[in-house]
View 1 (cartoon, rainbow, N blue to C red):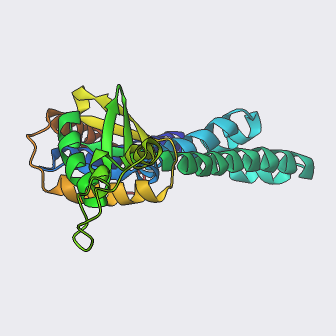
View 2: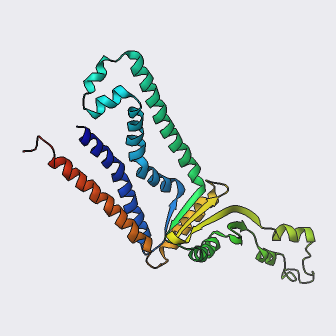
View 3: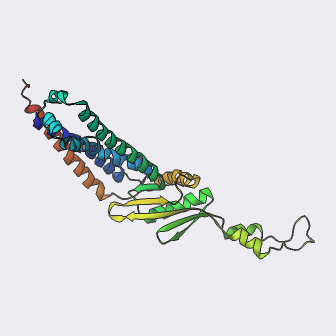
Length: 269
């Protein structure tokens, strides 16, 4: 019984991780870069860690109590019936604090991940080419300053609206004059968003961090950039093969452990 409990707990730890690695292998093996909003990307991380959070954590808490550990390991849960109300209330409170911390921490991290945009199987050069098209379609320009991108509206081309010759309706009038203050007001770009780029060349992985998460500019740029990236063809990412091998190895361990557990079942005919 103790062996069966340990094996089942071990499988619950490995199976979500194997599924997550398989999904990473899929997105990195696609012929196009894949854009994933930060909250959805972190939801995948939570899936991978779900076995550790929902099984490993409670198992560690149960291991802190001798009576609970003995009852669970030896399959004698009826021994817990004779414990007092105070014992149950104390451990219920401990487990309640643990699960509240897990749920609250996950919700807080998901909310913070609004500031991030993740691009799989891409490089900075690909991002910059697509960004030219995206900004042109949205009426924006972008300037790179180190590891930051400044998205802005307004450029020197706006001055063409003021650089006009004599009016056709009143040819006797001279050119419209523009004061320096008016020219500065037209030429000065309006910063719409600032984005920090974090590149991981080995994984062909890009992370964009927005200084103002959840803004309309972020949503518009993410939607347009996702469409633009679908039209880009990139070479194979070697990381996808390693992730697939790792995921397959975990799945083989899970299948082998399940087969061994079923084979060792004394009730099996």
